[in-house]
Image (cartoon, rainbow over the protein chains, first blue to last red):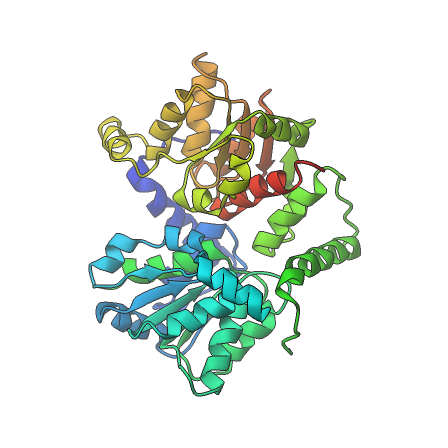
Length: 210
Length: 210
């Protein structure tokens, strides 16, 4: 296969055109509002499975945009997602991204209680006292912790981006929120990741004024 | 689906068992040396396609381990991969991870020359004057830049982990190295990502004394 010369500024545009064309060839029509989000997920993974497994609660994208416009913060469960999220763009609305996973006291408490660091991180996040969009790209235990805090009446997340990846409790943890009243963007099944979580947040940011 | 209680320390082990079992069910037997690398890639993506598309040059893993044992540095093309690589483990052998993509002067030079930041970053990397393993998880232009420097006789990389993801020039850029004499670990096709690049580096680090 030959290398073709594409202007750097044109690469992303061309990629999205290819994704659009191939979705069309597959007979897949995405919901207009969801399209830029799902397409960016496919762009970041080259995996068209996401066209069939991404789930959005009613009005999810408008809700997420509204939260960000009002200065919501993002809490994520990996430093990779934190690194991938466009923090400059988020800061324009007053938001910040947090990840407590690597904090030493989080590791210590998790070890003592025999829970994951994600569980403890989500408890910390709940006490931030600002509206938070949770962007979970790795640990199903993060979602489980949020759900438990909710059922115990301690804390209800404003929005959950639930795309942990993996083989143990990932599918079940996502189902908890698919069946809840919390606004969500979730990828059903095993797939997801920090890159997917970051892509979803960025897609919302890039389409916020549209 | 029910949440099952798994000790935090057991989650990864259980995940790898499930991956092993499912590969077996699919009739896929991985090369013994490559198995921990490919399995960690599947672990990080929940995508079994990688079992069929990961390519290793002869003796690639032993070569990568040898480079790391001798203090090789890692250069990557995203801050997400930099964030995901186990820098503490790498430092035990004297290595560091670099990413030049967000450097202001890189952006400036790229704009002036109408090339990608990845192109300029790879030129910077070539002048580090230490053995380098390139871990490319995003930009095919990073691979193309390395290849051009090689054919122009300027610089030959010691090792290339080539897993850019996407739709424009990704397949072709990987082919350049699949057909070269540079030791490589490459995922053939469109798939890859910063998370995949980090997973491959970490898998090598975690298996280095085995």
